[in-house]
Length: 324
Image (cartoon, rainbow, N blue to C red):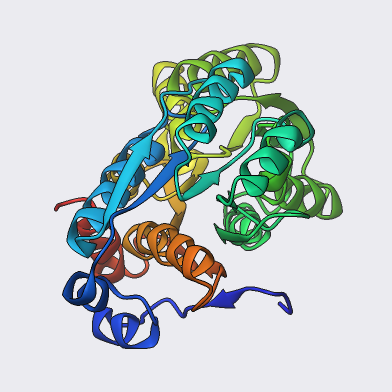
């Protein structure tokens, strides 16, 4: 896709990454005369992916040697919680803020205030107007990968159709829309009816949504989660309903360790559109430093891969991201 982003390939070696970025951890650590403070705010802090990512971002800052990372504790897309944290960071004049806004317009005043004070404001999961940079991943690609994989499975397992699907969304986070828009669009074009379309990013609501949908639509056999958490909840519901693993297709997005390990176990959980976690965490540090210093890339997208049992070695490599 053509965009302002720089986009690394899926198999970039760590050494090349360090060489290619003007402000690698080793370079800064060797010439550091100031500690930069970077705040990272994710609105769905309860998700397994966000928990793992935050740890990686802190580790990347520590490895750099000149970066202190601050984290917020926003859960369930709580705007007031996020706003309070960001206000505190603006008050203490951190050097950069990387944020996935619960509602961009509601935080516009804070962005302007921060920038007037000399702070850099970067957005997570995609670029926005007025920001000083961005880090992200291709949510359209993510949704496209799971949608196409699901339809290929349906074509082989249910050539005559007569099944239905469910897709979870997270409509407050518009930057993630590709994760549900692509499955909805492609399922409609293929004639696969979607009988449930609800906001959900946790195992608890994934379980409840799938249970309700299965009661109302016993032919439900495809479930696409906006993330692995929602999909893992659905997996429990399908198991509890006694649906045979070979008769169902469940997929998540993000590539959490629990989701990828569910894929590895075989059965109904067949795929996860996995973000390259180390790459994403490093870009949060690198892009922030580039914005602060005026040197280097400030916009960047991390690659997304479909983790499946068709490539067990690559699946193991995606799982290994979480082992350190």
